[in-house]
Amino acid sequence: MRELVRSNARFFLLAGLAGLGLRIFFVLLFPGVVDDSRFYGDIAKNWLQHGIYGVTNSGQIVPTLSRLPGYPAFLAAIFAIFGADNFRPVLLVQVLFDLGTCFLTADLARRLLSARAAKAAFVLTAICLFLANYAAAALTETLEIFFTALAVDLAVCGLRFDVGNAATTGVAQKPRLAVWLGCGLAVGAGILLRPDGGILLAAIGGYLLILTYRALRSKASGTLATLGPILLAGALLAAGVTVMLAPWTLRNLITLHRFEPLAPRYANDSDELVMTGFNRWVKTWMADYVSVQEIYWNVPGSAIDVTRLPGRAFDSAQQREETTALFAEYNNDHEMSRELDVRFAALAATRVRNAPFRYYVWLPVVRIVDMWLRPRTELLPSDPRWWEFNDDGRWLAVSIVFGLFNLAYVGMAAAGLMRAREIFGIGLFVLFLLLRSLFLGTLENPEPRYTLECYPVVILLASAVFSRLDKLPNPGHPNVKSRIQTF
Image (tube, rainbow, N blue to C red):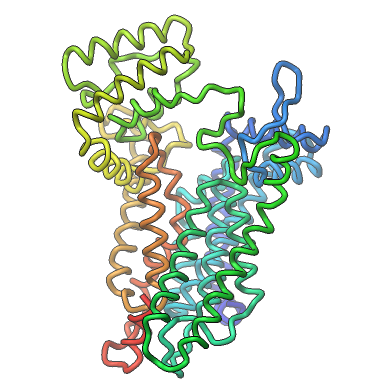
């Protein structure tokens, strides 16, 4: 990558400055310090000032496991230098991480496609509006995207393919041990930021299992010799992740007497009520981000306007009356009691029983599509109901531009996938996208930001559109068959 940057210094300087300017624009005009930011900040301050990884509750610092320690550690490091609750330096450092992601995606494209594709990947990352927007928000996304790109780049490096010996496993005979250990450490860092970072571990581990299966089925000589490096790669990957997660797991075991290597599913502490019944009821009708804002995030704590519920939340007039009665009771004190949660659970069970296909297939697919294709303007003042065209003209235009931008990236990735289907390692990328999308479909809160971790892979595939034809595998080349066999 250094040689490519050196030989195209002017290009990378101008593209880098454009990316820097775009991110600084968002930092100055639309800095995102939201409730989650302050929650992370509270943990960071308590950890930094009192040595307790906990939250402030009624003047007391209570140890917590509701959030993984990656982002609080990042905040604590910056607060130690620039002062507590000083989020501006946090955003500026995130800008640097996001620019680092530009180089990592470019390096991926360079390894797998061509120098031309690498330059395209750098520009696509640098000018990506929503990546730049999230770099200006004190949230985990920017760091998570960086470590995802780093882990994927290292995995590709470890899976480098020696065309000269026509190997069929996709793993070099002598893998670089430091590369696979580094990949594990990068995946572990991503998991310490967000528990769903484990999906990348599942994708890389799953890809290694596929290679193992193919090596065992291969009748070629030297099967055992090619199997060893795959198993070693998997062991080093697991070791790196374990090293990152072990301190957090031990802390939870010693301090809170709980074996918790990640964080609870609903980011709750032991004394908090988990609204399992309400959450399941939400999943029987939730399809888009608008309802997350208007309904899901407001429970508990705020009044709910039942008229905001979409028609699909009711299967009959009787069900509408029952739901209205439940929310009327909730609106009395804006609290979700155990009894009320149980009644929501009963309502959810009835709806699932009446329409299992809707609950298990149709709605998850719609939620996945919504997360991938919705305009990513949730950090901006734009109306989430942009399609009603009743927003202020300026912000309506912003929603449309962001939406078209996102559609362009997804469309280019789809086109690149068709061109790059014979490029080594494509199975790893497809597996990651599928696993993450399927996981997101199981959530009751379809937030567009949850697909941002996929964008290093999306941009890599999109860059294939810009790759020279003579850089892509020739279908007539004798080694294309072996490349395809690596999945």
